[in-house]
Length: 112
Image (cartoon, rainbow, N blue to C red; front, side, top):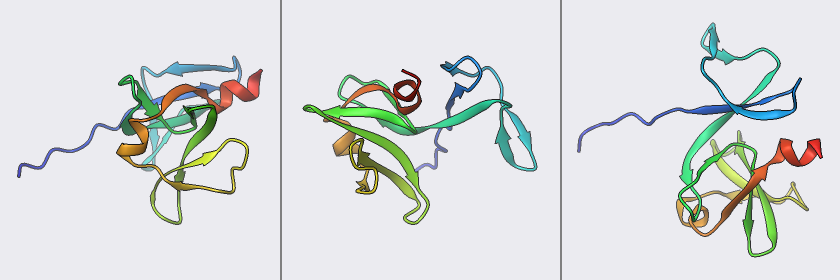
């Protein structure tokens, strides 16, 4: 098998304009990616049922229930939690992603 590094992609929540945006550049300071006044959101490597890219803090729908995607430090992996109960999470896997539909970003919902 040939090694192929994964693509690491980001979009960002602009805290000043309260808009979700794609980035043209990101600064790197001592190995940490930063963008002033932005919250960087990493691509999970997964796609929803329509093939749309899923990013960190995206809100996904399964039937009528909404879930938020986040990185879990304890398990070192992507997780989802019901928007109604963020303390109850489970691993976010490709099979789950393919059954869900991207609804919005968590930050967009908070801005309303």
